[in-house]
Every structure is written in structure tokens, then in C-alpha cells.
View (cartoon, rainbow, N blue to C red):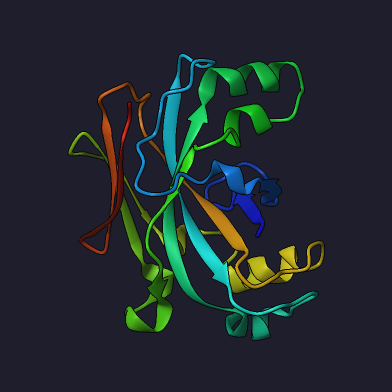
Length: 196
């Protein structure tokens, strides 16, 4: 299983095209464990992503056929070491140590797309300690899911069980030990985690 991430895919983003990169599967927090604040960072934020689960083997997929390659989606909470990222950017180094460290992502249960009304307008609200930090709609994406699958499958063979993380522009204030982070999607809590 691989995790393919798509970033800067927002209508108001300064970059001309989304950025595509990979994460190892060791980023995933399993068994309802909390997020443990890493000792190598002093400033950690949390952001969200729409997670598409691939259900069919495919390569060079045209967008008009892309819907046959997925039927479920979820939402992830992704922790980011901001100070490590700033240093990497300053030194023109890869961002992996800041964005892809072990146990830095929790994924919600998956939802069947045909069970919701209007996936393209699906809304996500990000809460820190019970206070809403930001609100996001799928319609804010520059490229929709089908166009993203077409682009990604030019470079990567998509296999059953692969995840595509389409990052939103939502990001919390820096989190600290004792905080709780939650996502409310269409007025239903679908994922949450404690910081320890």
C-alpha cells in the first residue's frame, strides 16, 4: 500500500499546479492510539486531507473513467512539524522529516460516496479543543478527484488499497500536549485524536 499526497490544489493557491509526493505507510496511527508529540519539534500543527481509497488496479487512467477506480473516501488528520519544515525550506531540503514522520496521521472510517448527497460539495470543519478552526468544501479544489487520478496515474501504477491524500488548506494553530483535534464532516464527527 502506498500513500500519494496532493498538495496546493486550492483555487486560491499561488502555485500553478498541485504538488504530488509520497508518504510511507508508517505515518498511519493505528488502533485508536493518540498522537505523541515528537521530541524533535517544538511547533506542530495539524491539517486535513480528503482520502480516496483505490479499489481497482490502474495506470494512465482517463478522468472520464476515474470514478470506476474508487467508491469510498475518508478524512485524515495530519500532524506537521512546522519548525522542521521551515528549516528544510530555508536549506532547500526535502520536506519528509517534517511531513512524513512515523505515527503522524490518523484516518477516519471510510464512507461510501454513493451514500452521501453531493460529494463535490462535502464540507469539513476542523476543531481544536472544541473550537472551530476552519471550514472547507470539496468545491474549493482546483482539480477534482477524477482529474487528480488521471494526473497521478501517469506516473504511478495505482493498486487496490492505495490511498490518495488530497490536502485541504485547513491547518490548526500549533498544538500542545493535552489538546484534542476533531473533524466534523457534514455535521457528523468522523475522526478525532488526543495529543499526548
